[in-house]
Length: 220
Image 1 (spheres, rainbow, N blue to C red):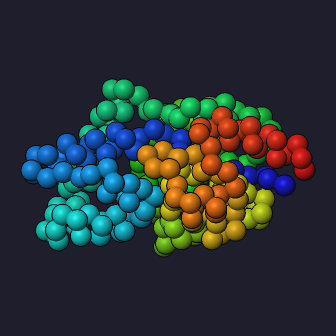
Image 2: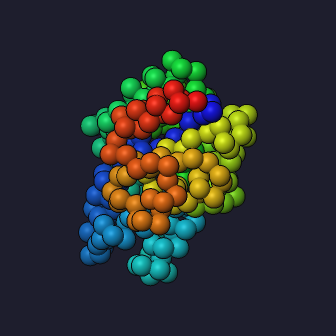
């Protein structure tokens, strides 16, 4: 029986990946550089350490990674302040359903704590979650299952009592290796066949995930 739902944040609940990619390209344009969408997709769901190494491998060891990330986040925050935090289709309805039916909910993300708290609050969804576990609070990020296992531990549930909602292949792998059912709601990249097989379901949006959860529980 599913008692808890573990949510990724960027790309799953928050429609921020496309905007973040645009901010990266804007930063790089001033340095006569560019980033392909294919390369950006390889960064999704990865730890800060892995992302940094990938970027340095791509743009050179002297690339000012910290300055880049700081400025990209400033540009992103400015856009979110002006345009509001864009949430994914079906999110609010899903959160309300889970809350009304007494599911435990937690966020497990590769993003840093300071950013996570700000985004969840500004999106008006912080109240739905028991807690969150962030990328700077684990030793091993996705695709390692540590963040999801810690989420289960914090909620006091077994892995077979939890369900992960993810958009990235790294997140699918992490949930699968942790022995936790995972529903994938793709964002910028549809999962390759290898990862599709690891997922319990691949949905077009969170409304479909809600339908699955309702049906699954009725069968138990």
